Amino acid sequence: MQTVRDLAALRAAVALLPRPLAFVPTMGALHEGHLTLVREARAHAASVVASIFVNPMQFGANEDLSRYPRPEAEDAALLSAEGVALLWLPPVEAIYPPGFATTVSVSGVSEGLCGASRPGHFDGVATIVAKLFNQVRPDLAFFGEKDWQQLAVIRRMAADLDMAIAIHGVPTVREADGLALSSRNQYLSADERARAVALPDTLAALALAISAGAPVDSALADARGRLERAGFAVDYVAAVDGSMSPVTEGVERVLAAARLGSTRLIDNMPVR
Ligand code: AMP
Image (tube, rainbow, N blue to C red; front, side):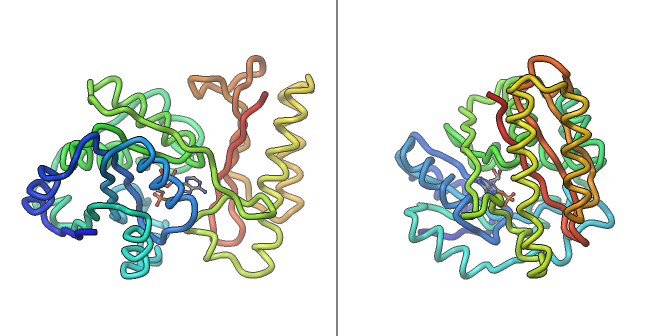
């Protein structure tokens, strides 16, 4: 695996890679969820480029940018072992040079849920993903369903801006007890980790209740109460349709974001 840290070297290296070329953007602190994206990418492409960039633009002022884990050597070894051809590790100045003034903003799908509780977050996501797409110029790109709203924002952006990149969503990889793998799980204390399983448990019960015909509003209220009893401070619990709009009929997905202590966790599940 080749590792590059400047844009000219990236472009020169990408030009030599066999196509189709798949791209897996990450913020590092890699786990089996990220590695599953890489494996899916390898199954669909002749070469895989991964990136690690902890994007300041998608963190709010009081969020965890400074404490976000950055185990660079371990991450590089994991990606290399998975057969990644090229690792793009841009320094912040290469992404946001002095004078940088452009924001990609996707309206509608990015406005509720995490967009409401993290103002500016999805502008940061759309802007960095658009930049990374222009830098790497992949044929396909892989994102986790764990970040369901993010995936919807990226699909919307790619379609609206005629980006000739096939966007693939990959199902959420979970711990044995159901907790979705996340780089942020390592912030949890042992006690918080034990209580965190209430998030997937609650969403699974909510999805089941809605699919069995329970009134959506009361099912959402029950889910919120269950999370609060487990010690979560709830940002939202929501039931949405295929275009991410909150609905009481035709629910396709349930989503929640909630904090245990200082750690904000998100998860989502399909309603069948
Ligand atoms: P991050 O490093 O958190 O920005 O995540 C990079 C990519 O990995 C995103 O597309 C995430 O949706 C995806 N991802 C993170 N956690 C998981 C998981 N547990 N299962 C599947 N994909 C994941």
